[in-house]
Length: 285
Length: 257
Image (cartoon, rainbow over all chains, first blue to last red; front, side, top):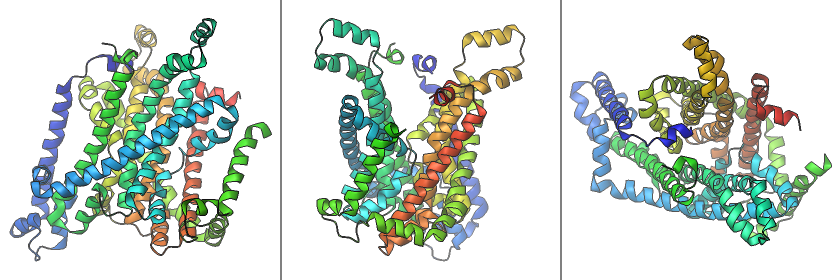
């Protein structure tokens, strides 16, 4: 893994493969469209305006849309509110929840590292909670608070909180005994040991959890939206789906926006990791 | 034993006690219908046990398990492909890995268009969700081989096939099980959420219909049952791991406790 990361990532092969996928998609979508929609209904199946188009032909564009139409929907200013603005609303909740959950998780881990009783009482639940579908609580949280922002933030915070707690605790515990012995022999204060030794040791572990949580918080926010909310990219996905073929490109555009949210948030945390933990072997050039 | 289980049990009893006593309702100013009490939830689990366990054992559980197996096989196959073709390793692996940060769950409406309201569409969503962690982990296991081991095998004129089955494959197994364990949670989430909007039966359907009619105890009961199914899946994968790779450090360390 380190050997792979040490080499500078070469964008060319990725671009070639991505381009090949896109071309294959365009070809497959064109073939599928032409094979399933008879010529007289083709315009109607794309625009969705013609009610005479049979239902099985109307659904073709939703199943496998032409990438060029999806791209057009993404850059069309008319869709900006439903796609990009909705995406930002989702991202805002995810980021706030991520920050809240990360801070609480970090604080709890520090407390647990100090108090073994606390660790023994709570850690089993933190671990079990990783094995159960926490996100299913989304609609219930929404039904309790009746506020989609609160629901999204709570779920995003919840999915962030546990990985951060578990990883931070592991990181705080992973201190090199020799380094600790050296610091205590030099009469370092507890605070110095924390700031100069334990925290830096824990940082890579914390970022590992934050990277998982960045994605999970976006997914959590979207799941809350899919299960009942008024605004956000998940809502756009649901609504455009119900409005039929006229919205096929917009539906897929919304899925693309949702994917971009997850990718961007993950990237941002990964870049932050690179700056915060420069000493890690895989970041040394 | 008591030392180990005492504190967590005390916390559980305390939380359930405070909840039943109305502390959370007072704290967050909730009405009874918004947040049911533990006793009501247990009552709902008992009363509706036939429906809930049918949902879990006939629908949601098998969907999650089938998707986990399908996505796992697909991911492992891709990892083998990427590990053997250097161009794909540099070109396709980063793209497959980026699937990890994509909310796959968003495509579940499309899966229904392709595969209908039944179980296949849920299995497809679960398989897609499990796919990326499996590709990344299995690749890591297949690829990060000790150079000495590889040199030894080639110096003994081992065929590529032997190198794969006797070196790369066993080395990848612990990574594969890690991915499967991560996948069990994803699989349950995928199956539940996919059922939530478009399905005929399953825990997700029970969850959604009971929330709509504000029968919160049953909705909570569905979540408790889903958690039990998730734990059972996780336990199943762990047992399999123990049986398949008893030689690995992670398994031995656990056994020695």
